[in-house]
Image (cartoon, rainbow, N blue to C red):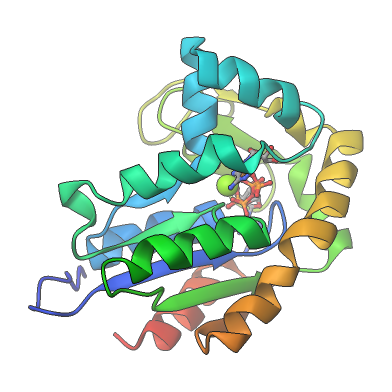
Length: 225
Ligand code: AP5
Ligand code: MG
């Protein structure tokens, strides 16, 4: 059942933290649906730009294919601008941003200008070995971005999206050697955000190794609805 989020003065500004493959996208989609807020994924924005062959997409691809982060200056303004859209006025779920301390600081500063702050930083905790096992099995829809797992969350018809019928593919950056690099980059550059948001008093940790609906139920408990 949809809860909605229309009560005056109540916003849900949520960020998803967690290693690559921890389930940020899977959970963010469900959160967005339940609370009627937009799901803003920087990875999805970059992949859409790569597909369309835009200048941003071409630049981002150089980094993404190597498992590296796209430079902060290509990400920050894009997200800060996206947060001003009408659909984001009651909140949003940010998936894949912030990913470095400078990005987190830029977000804090942009929100502070409007007297706002992040309400919840949800860290989905999954050990590296589970991540490596998961990534090779992930399949993503070329058209709508829905994700599946060939064993854990299979589509009804193999190779095709349940939601829109388009083809499912293995992401370029889900090759094993690139996954390893992404995990190293995560530990070095993104994991420090756990301390950052703990200090801000908004960090909530959930166990991401259990069934995806159990992860979701734990998040709903945290969000208190
Ligand atoms: P992005 O697209 O954000 O990739 P990521 O963080 O590496 O995360 P993933 O999308 O791989 O994983 P996820 O946590 O969303 O997991 P999912 O739900 O799919 O970014 C890609 C690249 O873009 C980056 O490497 C970087 O280069 C660049 N980029 C993006 N944002 C940036 C930024 N802010 N700054 C700089 N660069 C940036 O789940 C994974 C799999 O597990 C799926 O198959 C799923 O079906 C399955 N699964 C999910 N939950 C469960 C469960 N509970 N049990 C079993 N299986 C599950
Ligand atoms: Mg994702």
